[in-house]
Every structure is written in structure tokens, then in C-alpha cells.
Length: 342
Image (cartoon, rainbow, N blue to C red; front, side, top):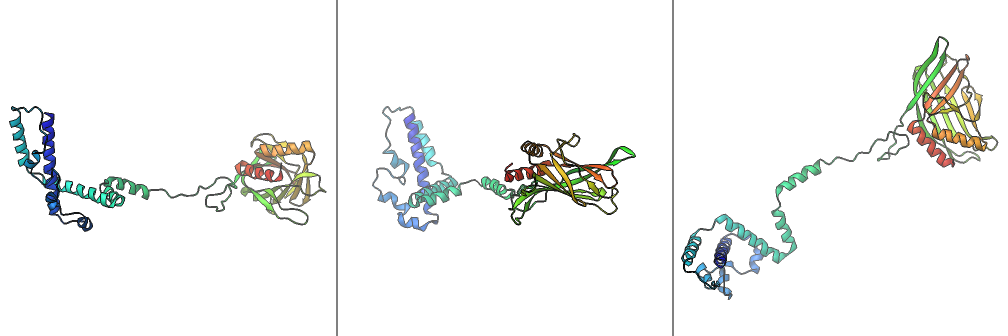
């Protein structure tokens, strides 16, 4: 039975190949170069001396088909009937064209190699893959630089970014209110370059620009490394006040010093140093140059996140301005201390 089935399959394959070749012979060739190299498909049967040709009839091919060693007379008539039925059936035209195209592609692939095989592979690629890839490429988000939320953080486009303001609170003494009055403002921290002048080299300073809109109160505070050998200070802080003429306190007559604290409500720890009034509205605070005081001051400036600057107005009323360092202030001090070697 297995041998008979193999014979039937061989006959059907021969018929399909013959029909495909004859069909292709009647179709205009898409590749004239291939036809010039190959002989006519119709004449291949006569030229070949092989014992078996696809152009021969099924009956001719059966002569070369091996016969089973033990023929079965009872089953043989049925096999002959199946062969006659299969031989007489018409081969579908569309299938013949498909087989012919496959044969063309295989032959062209052998002749021209990889380029044609690549083209053939692309022809059989399904279109849904391309449909999926096209929207994927079209919908790719454009790379946009992230806007930094901290002072000194460079953007992807290397464009200058406006620094982020931190919180400032001015506590004014009020005889009619034991709790006093509070005015909220803002501070902008930045690392400021100092140009070289005279015998002094170029350096950097940490600058804070403070503003209390409700009081029309403006103040700048600048920390820098002391390079003046005649001044016994490790670092200096310059405080400048810009107040309107009708300011309720008149002006700032004294700044006792600077304190550091961990949060807005905490009690401050004073920095070791001495504050002096240089001119109206301008004060200089020199931090102690003693090794123990210097180490302690640097540690407070690095670790504490708020400043307290006590003020005494010309009318002798007192005030405290609390200044938040925040991330911009922390970064500015860290960069400055790194350049100062502290």
C-alpha cells in the first residue's frame, strides 16, 4: 500500500509540473535575460536523454516506476481506477500559475543569486508588518530637553535657565501684636564669578537676591572666601539693603550677626564672626579664622538649610529675616566650597 501511494503521489506531481511548464510557456516572460540563457521549455522533453521527463505522459512515466515486489491482484484494479480518475481531472489554472511563478523565482535565484532572492522575499512579505511599522515611526516622540528645577543644572540644549526662587519670611516686631507680623518673599541663589583685580585672583561667591514685595524690601547677601591677608577672617558675608524712603522702620541700623537653622521654625545657631556697619544699608560679616571656629562655621553652612539674619531698624524695632537655601542654595554652596577647598 505504501508503494502504491508513493506511485500515485509521483504521478500527480508529474502532471502538476507538466501543466505548470506548459502554462508558463504561454505567458510573456518577465525576464528576457533568463529566456536567452535557458532553452525553450516546450523543447526540453526532446532534448533530454534522461530516462524520465516531466513532459512525457503519465502512462510513459509509469514504465519507469518501480513495481511493488508483491503485487496484489485484488487491489490493482482499484489503483488503476484511481489513476484514471486523477489523470482525467483538470488541474486548476490558478495553482498552475502559482507553481510556475515559484519555478521562475527559484531559477532566477540560482542565476542571479542573493539580489533576486531578496526581491522575491520582499514580494512575499505580508503588508500588515509595514502598516504596523509606519505608525510606529510616525509617532516617535521628539526628544525634548528637560527643564531643570534647580539652579545651576544645565539643560540638554545648553540654554540658560531661570533659577528657581526659594522662600523668605520677614518677621517684624509689632507692639500691638505679641506674635508680630509676617511678610513672605522669595530668594534666588546663584554662584557669582568674581573678576581678578589688583593682587587678588579670580574667584566665586555665593549670592542671594532677596525680595519682600509687601514691604518693598530688597536685600542681597554674598558669601565669599577672604583673600585679604590683613583681615582676620576665613570668609566674609556682605549684606546690602535697599529700602523705600517711606519704609516703616526707617532703615536698617544694625545687623548683629548670622544664624543657621535646620528648618523655618527651629532656633538658630550663630556663626562665629563679627558684623560691622560699613555704610548706610551695607554691612560686612567676617567669619572667625580660628581653626575650630572655621570648621564649625563651614559645617553649619553646609548642613543647615535656613539662614536667620536679625535686624535692628532705625526706630529700634527688631526683625528677623528667615532665608531658605533649598536645592539651589545647597548646590551653590557645595560648588563654592569645592572651589575654595573647604
